[in-house]
Image (cartoon, rainbow, N blue to C red; front, top):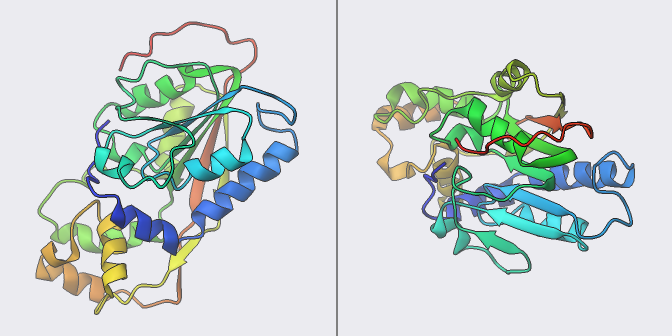
Length: 260
C-alpha cells in the first residue's frame, strides 16, 4: 500500500466539497446508538482503525463519536499526515502491509482499495483478520456513477496506467463474496459540488486533481481537458458510494497470518 497523494491539499478540497464525510458520520452514529455496531454505549477502551486516513477527515469525527476508545490513524503518505490539524489520536506513518497491529473492534477503510499496489483479496483478508471476533469493518468505495464517470471520460486520454485496473464497489463486493467472508452492503446517496469543467476555478482544479489520482489539471493532455469540457455542468454531482460491511463472527477466533 503506497500513497500517490504526496500533498494533502487536493484531498482537503475534495472533502470540503462533498457531503460524504457527514453522511458517513451520521450512518456510524445511527448504528452506534441503535446498538448494531460491535462498540456499544457504555463500552470503554475499544480499538478503532482509520485505515488510509489521509489528512484525518474521517478520523476527527471517529474521535468525537468514540471518545472513550483508542483511535488509530494509519496513513502511508507523510505529506497527508503533515496536513492533520490536531493530534488527539495515534497516527502511524506506515503501509497496511507492514502494519502488525490487530484486535480492532471497528475498522474504517474509505476509498483506499483503488490505490493499493498489492493483491486486493489478500488486503481485504488482512482487514478481516485484523478484527477481533465480533468486530466489523466498513469498506467504502465509489459506484459506477459520479466521480467514476469523470474518470472514464478522461481515462482514454491519459498517458499513465493508474486507472487500468480500476475497480468499483460491486467489484470489491464480489471479491469479499469470493473470500466467503460474512458481509452486507449499503449505499450512501452522496454528492459533491458541481464543477465547471471548461473553466474550473483553482479550488475545482484541486478537486479534479484528487479525482484524477494526483494529476494536476495543468498537466492534463489537451485531449483530456477537451473531454472534460463535454461533461454537463451540474449544481451538485450525484456521487453515490457503496459500503461493504464485513462482520467477523463471535465464534471465529482463528489466528491467521497477516502477511500480504
